[in-house]
Image 1 (cartoon, one colour):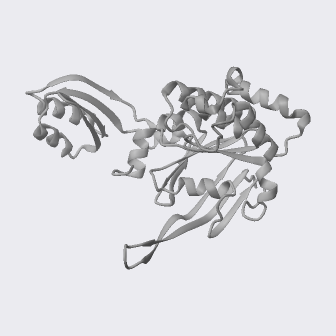
Image 2 (cartoon, helix red, strand yellow; image 1 turned 60 degrees about the vertical axis):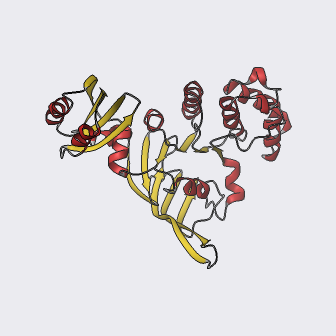
Image 3 (cartoon, helix red, strand yellow; image 1 turned 135 degrees about the vertical axis):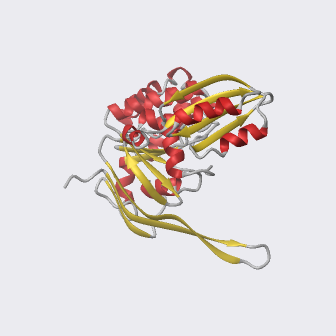
Length: 326
């Protein structure tokens, strides 16, 4: 039997907290409810879901920061709960945002500190740090303090920090959160290069295009349960009969919008209102019915643009996870 480098079987994890101002009561939240999946060696595996779905809890369990209440976890043949001393040198993790860096130190000194924590031999340390700074494009600012860095530069330094021990598996929790489009693209390029060199990557993200571009396979998680696991292309095929209608309208009234929202042929609709116009994104399996209805409903308004396209991973996500998620 071909086992993955990550094996998760029926994992559960709950949190208990006190609620109430005067009369305290215990409230238990099930963050993970019997989650099972595996990740193959050399794979980029995406874990996608709304806030509170259980993504970060899962990452913390896999990276030895949290112990599951039940179930089994194996990473590189080791149990992260009992074998963490042997496992930690083989893995690393990167969090989104600007945590886990010392802002008053230079980029080089940050990496040097973490290299010492991982007991990197002094004979290879200098060369390794220079390679990492070059990999993430920070070699020219290596000796500048991190507090002078942009958000994108800090996140690239986080990537370098996560690679000081040459991990076999890299865990990333929302790595591109808050990054501008250029920095986010640079980050994706770095992750692809790492993966091409053999690093197995597991990441969580809210950005569907990022997951679609990077991931070999994707798991949708919601309310602590896995709903679907497949390749991005296969996931999109599962809603292959779905069409996406994008429409921009000037001067549409609320009653006109409501008439479209109430049409039975529509699976889901997203409405973005602007000062004088609104844009509609409609999911339907019957565009031949919906498009004429939109034109009829908007007789006294101006449709400035209307296109019909195939579904994206975001459309699959909305259909799979459901509405009203954040």
